[in-house]
Length: 315
Length: 306
Image (cartoon, rainbow over all chains, first blue to last red):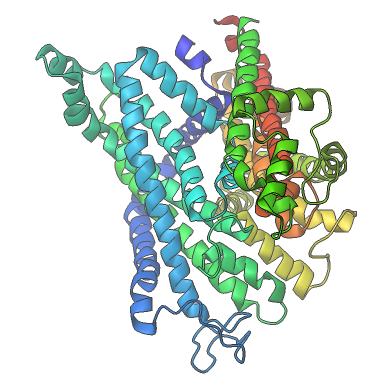
């Protein structure tokens, strides 16, 4: 047990335990590995098709059917799907559910993109600096990320909403901060291993500056694990935004968010349950496609599996 | 020992830093604190006087120390919207939260561990496949949507259970199950893989070679080794439950701490928001500390080193 391990948070240890358990399971059960090989392309394919369909609906849909998501029509409230003029029906104010679904998907995608790019850029920068520079920088990075990592995402978001007011911005900031911590931790761990490798030593011996080593030699190596992790956190971001909008903290009316739409339709389950279930299916579909793509990517890029396949010793 | 002591010190520091963070975060909006308490027609002078009375015009670090002093002396103040004493709200809603959270916490382990054991003992059977696929789905479905499906099925369609309310057993079932769902899925997975790891280890082979019955090996040796880390990390589930309680309590109208905090944030009732954020943050930090301590106790290797 090194000093490094002992000072990590219990959360981190629990996480590592889980990862180790999964890996042992995969090793103990050779069928699982075969299954993964078989599933590799299938996962990516299914996820991508589903993803393209949903994203396409969100991006292209409004161009065809218009983007008037706030227009009310009080004569046509609570229409079921396949009503005349309203493919998916209408909500309590007679707003077109299909249009709102499309715009809601756009909102989800916007939040996911903002959060993930923030998490990737900041997380990779912090993780690489901490892992490679070591010393006080590393200690600072580690204590800040461990501190944030200790709190549940929803609580952080509610606190920020308490300070900054409701809206998409606090949600993006909160989910972003937690995801930055997650990416930083993984990238840092990778870099600590990479730092001891020969190619880094060789680069150092050539007198290449530390910044250049990070940029040209370490970055390409941590890119794959960071991207795989980021794809997982895209799903987390979508779920978190929907959940926070659901309780009223995220997107503010009349801007539709999938979570807010689910919440709005909640009071009319008996009259027209589609007002809730349509956006709910939208969320589930988005999350499912992102998770499938993430699983597929992990199988393709997972350094553990790749090293095993090539018979190369890790580290 | 040294590790336990250093973790305790770390926990105290985390508590301190997070209390500052919470205080500053909520006070960012201090400017319009008067909006919640006073009618829109109130004059600027009256608002100014109001802020003065609440001490909102002092430097913020001074406000922090005054505030923490008041909390420690047991008088955190009153709500801005209904003027209820925060301590009364804490006991009232805290009790409800304890019922809901405690039930969910119990469900996580009482349902999760037996299912995980079952899956590991009947590995690759239909029961195992079923349990594992269900747990995969449970981890992917957002819990508020799950809550909605549950309400739609059990309350609106079948009419077996009420869709919301407090605080009878019938009203408790749906929110507790939804709150526990992801934790159960996680516990099932952890239990199953820990059991399998334990079953495949060398000492179990030795025991088998020694001629012990499979039943005895499982009950006395495998179970013990597999469950210790899971139970010792139970504190981590507290944090998870606190986080999800914010959403689940709001959905089911369960008047617990989470619902109070969300409502206070929505109504910009900052004393309530601040106080209950601190309470929940302290709970989470406590849970993490418990997990860490439990984990250290369960792992003799950690106890010896450092």
